[in-house]
Length: 203
Ligand SMILES: Nc1nc2c(ncn2[C@H]2C[C@H](O)[C@@H](COP(=O)(O)OP(=O)(O)OP(=O)(O)O)O2)c(=O)[nH]1
Image (cartoon, rainbow, N blue to C red):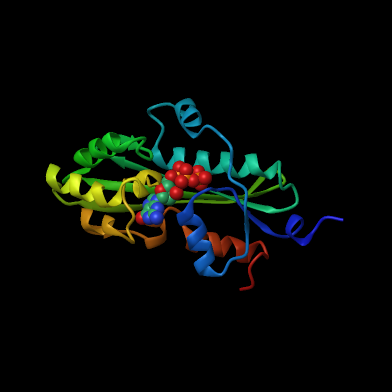
């Protein structure tokens, strides 16, 4: 007999602390099964010309569908975020020197952070959404970048855009347009609406 958690629950196909924190704070019950897939290989298959929102959606979809195989009766939520800035796509920094390079490139530019969410069950995509926030980056001196990373590295090694907006990351920006949760890494308001529509959350 399958347990409740294996029949009607929600599975978060993610290792992201930020995504878990959002669902926890919202009071959404779930269990986590990180998706074990090579995101960069998948991104490479989409090609360099792929639009950032397309890449984020496809990666979120791949994460959800891969975990569906381990939770065939449950709703599975996959999510992905990436940054587009100055015509380049950025994922999480691989090392501190990458983080320095990313921040130097972002300096004085507008960063577009795309966050996607896909809900699937039994291998079928039921809902999907991708949202974008625009963040105007201040002029960042090399001295500021080094001091910032002295405080924020390696915590931001898991953050696309090399920042935690809830921490010192807010110092990077002059202005932000868009949904707060999109900046944190998942379009939470859309996810909650989807869960209500799918009967997983009471309206
Ligand atoms: N704490 C925090 N994390 C952020 C913020 N903005 C973006 N992030 C995180 C959320 C995600 O964990 C990460 C984006 O990377 P990915 O979309 O590849 O997800 P990640 O590999 O972390 O986990 P997943 O693929 O879902 O298992 O950046 C922020 O302002 N604060």
